[in-house]
Every structure is written in C-alpha cells, then in structure tokens.
Length: 152
Image (tube, rainbow, N blue to C red; front, side, top):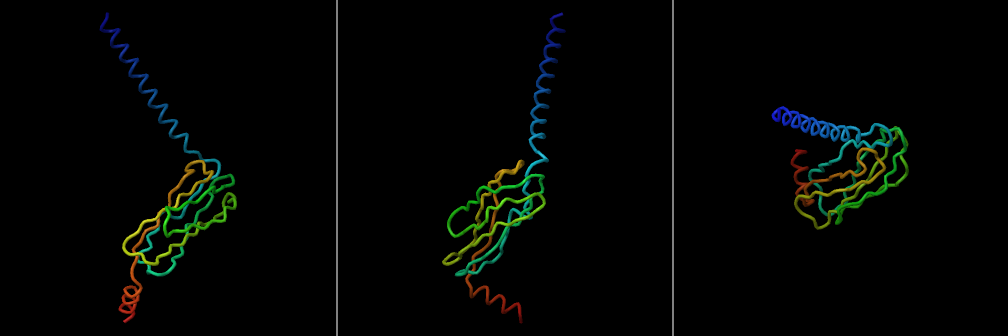
C-alpha cells in the first residue's frame, strides 16, 4: 500500500512541476503583445565598410511603427566618443516611418570600430533596442588610391 501512495505522490508532484513549467511558458508567449506601438527597424546593424579618416560620415536607421497605437521614442543614447545621434522625437503614428540619423567624426581615428545607439521607446515588445554601427577607419590616401586603381 505504501508503494502505491509513494507512486501517486510522485505522480502528483511531477504533474505540478509540469503545470508550473507550462504556466511559465504561457507567460513568455503572452508577454509578446501584438497590440500597441511596435517598432520595426529595417536593420539594427550597419557595416559601413571603409570610412575615410578626417571626415564626417552620415548615416541613418529607418524604422516603422507596425503597431496600432502611437509610438514615442523617449531617448537615443550613444556609446560616446565620436558618434553623435540626431532624432526629432516626434510621435510616430501607426503605419508611419521615421529615422534616427547619426554622424561619425573620423578625424585622427584608425583601425576597426563598433559603435552603439540605445533606443528607448514605448514599444510593447522591445522597449529598449541597441543599434550597432561598425566599420574600418582608413586613411584618405589609401581609399583614393584604391578608387583610382578600380577606375583603370
């Protein structure tokens, strides 16, 4: 008799653990909402390739509000240094798109680089997104020489 009781108790315990695991999975699935403001970037990583030294590189990240409520971007912060962000902070209506512009000042820089922009918004699924910009600083004479060789 005690063996049957132990078996039933073990079965009950296993069932409780299984139900708890299912409840945790359901909470993960339901936390991915389909209503409200939703930000959708064309790309979250840009590889600029070779960037000329002693210049200013301009670029942008384009995004769209694919949700059903107004999207508000609260802040756009950079990792510091020579990356400057530019954003107008106007609300983005559902179906509309906007952009986050950035500038990289390359004066005196050499070698590979990776910079990041952190975007915080009222997006229901991803309220904080990190955008990455990478490339290689090259001296202007190296870039011009490779262009001249390619033109011949």
